[in-house]
Image (cartoon, rainbow, N blue to C red):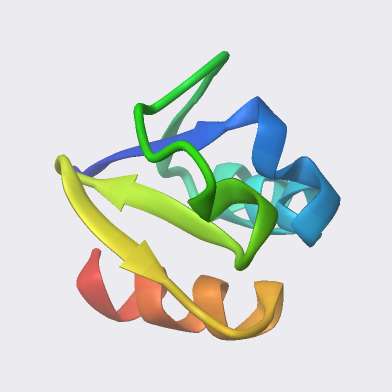
Amino acid sequence: MAEIKFCENNFEQGVEDVISRLEEDGAEVVVEGCLDYCGECAKKPFALVNDEYVEAETAEELYDKISEMI
């Protein structure tokens, strides 16, 4: 199973719903204070999937991208 990490500073981009949906799907989700992608969290929703940076224009698109990867 994939490890999915989110930056708590990226919540303003709507990733809370993505996290909830992924957890419902049984994914291992970790929320950290910082993922060292400073500045990116203010621009777009993003996550690290098995340490691979994944971003999207919307939170819904991010969920779709992550779902395809796992």
